[in-house]
Image 1 (cartoon, helix red, strand yellow):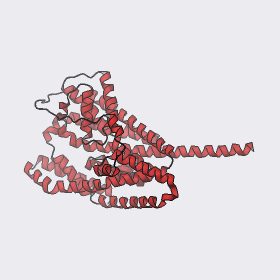
Image 2: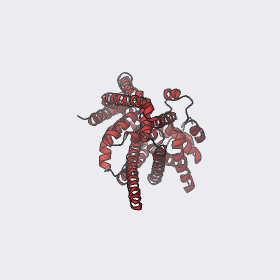
Image 3: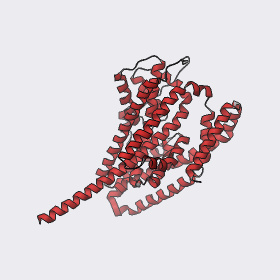
Length: 421
């Protein structure tokens, strides 16, 4: 049985066990199982993956930047990557706001008494941009500050490319470290079905059925928006720009999607998503090693969809009509916040509080969606990492086409030189 099938089987078993705990067994039984069985299994799996995240990002980006070599090419890839993320995030918000206004999930009787949410301030965008330069790269690695790790790794990779044979032993060591880490990823993935089982069982078993039923309309709107963005936006982008069949793309990337669904963390899934993109989607290591770690840090299309639907939901609950200018403000604020709050814990809710504040909605309304947010977080994480992989496929095809055109121009230049002689 393939690893994907094993993970899906573990997830299915987790759903069944979670439903049994939720609907048929006393809460005390679930608490015991969660404390002594489910939590340990899930925590071990997540910790094993997180153990590899920073080393893999560091090594992959060093090799990626060294493989690209030319700073102009690296800059070109970076600009195309960020442009893709900003465009797809804007489209995700448009889809979410449209469905929120059509489905109107906030209509009905919701108990607002005692609804409270402690707002956490996100750092200003300027501070985030200034803080991406690490003063101590080792501290950045210890703290898991991914933007700083990315900058340090890119600088080291560019230096290796420039120095060439003078540091060839350093490059060999980094390549060997990459092989070692990829082997560890394969070893950790043997534990994935058990971790997926435990994490899904906790998520399903810990949600009250009444709370899920009450928020059913909101959940439907979010899931429908995620579905449309996943299949229409990413599917069309991969097909038209990446020249790849969407079905082949989804089938090839499905192992990473399964891990993302169970862990609800783009960073935790990063080792698996990079290995899957390189092996199954044939994305060059130099591009995968640059695009996917950057995407895991700043690309949040799934989170943006949640914010759009949640904003409409909270506005409808409180009886506030958002104007067209308010909707434009939501799109602009959420798109910029996806980069401005990168690396901040609880980033989704921080971004949502920023969006609500920008249009004058009470942040206390976030308390209404917290009960089902864990379940939706699993699905939007799948969308987030799929966007990273789609971007990597598209950038790889774009660079292949660019280099082919450059070779043609060189040949034409040589021919014209012969004719002139």
